[in-house]
Amino acid sequence: MDQTQELRQYDRLHDPARVLALSDGVIAIVITLLVLEIHVPELTGGQDLAEALHEIRPSLTGFVISFIVTAIAWAGHRDLFALIRRTDRTLVWLNILYLFPLCLLPFGAALISRYDREPVALRLFGLLLVLIAITRLIIWSYATNRRHLLYEPISRRTKTAVVLIVGVQIVLYVLAVLISESAPVASLVIYAGVPILYFIATFVDRSTAPPGAVEDDFT
Image (cartoon, rainbow, N blue to C red):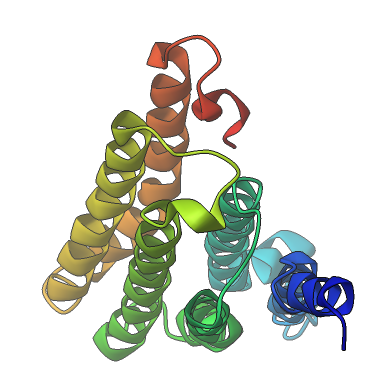
């Protein structure tokens, strides 16, 4: 094999396109599975439709929270891989690790859809959210601290901003897990509120970033 062929094979092995294709496919399936937990209610015992729809409120709540969490996970993954020129073995496996808790999210959503006031269900759901945030932080830190994987170096400000935003998510999710038994409603409110805080923090980060910073394209 001549040098040109070796370089081509090397480029194919480290091309991030296949990593992105796998990730997009998995996340698309996760979103599809999430919606399967929502069922059209049956009218029984003289119920009207409004009463029946009220009974599926936990399912809708679980779906909305999980859908937004999945959307944020995909958007963050997109933002990161827009910066990545090539992959290595460790990055590939970290990406698979990142997908692991996302694949379990439909199970967590189903739990809180049926048992939205049960501490065990709330803890398991919160644990999945913590794992999603932690694995995102790990893959971000690994990739952005290895210049040979990137199109261009990432500024310290950008690295710090993402770590802070995701770190606050982790802290709030852990808090929700800890209070799930004594205050299950508050725990569920935290799960619903963290994505809102994420969008606010991302907007502030973009608004205060220097002109031309990579944050301009962050979602």
